[in-house]
Image (cartoon, rainbow, N blue to C red; front, side, top):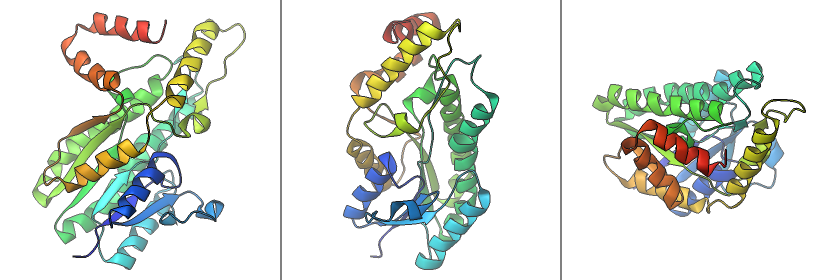
Length: 269
């Protein structure tokens, strides 16, 4: 049987690289993407194609290149994303637009680019890497939560629209994992004299501690592999520490204000 062909956005580092390396070891033909693959001359885990999710033309070309080389595209993993922190009131608007361009509009453009091929070949799978943070509004991560939450809702809607084409779309929501996301995250500056100065700095320190102490990205890769093997994947899959996963169940059953109090206690606010 021919190898299944996988395209992973944001495949040069972090979760994307871990997923691609793992799937390669499982005999998939993996293509990753990076804005500029020339910056990764020593990268040999799998082939990297140039793609910037903010530039639709690069998306169209990368997808066309994969189809030209392989004749099909079985799995899309929408992994490219960016973090953002800051008080809602003080975050520059251009940074809000940027995080939605990368975390929401970009993945939508990639899905629109691969759907015609998947429909023509009689099926395919799309896995959108969202976040546990996308299921709740987190203090000083509100724009990140909103961008990932929006992607999760689009996934739910599109999944129903394409069901007749044997295309399945799934949300995979990681918690905190030890990647380089904190280094690439946009931080609204902690401003002297800001009414949020003390509480934001404290929250920022706590967020970085959570990422630094996060789990091994191989857990996400294994979950992706498991989803690909399923004939009919579920809509949502969380992956992360026990309490992070439990937090999703608690949000469904607890009164809103009680759940809010748990978050406030967790973030020491």
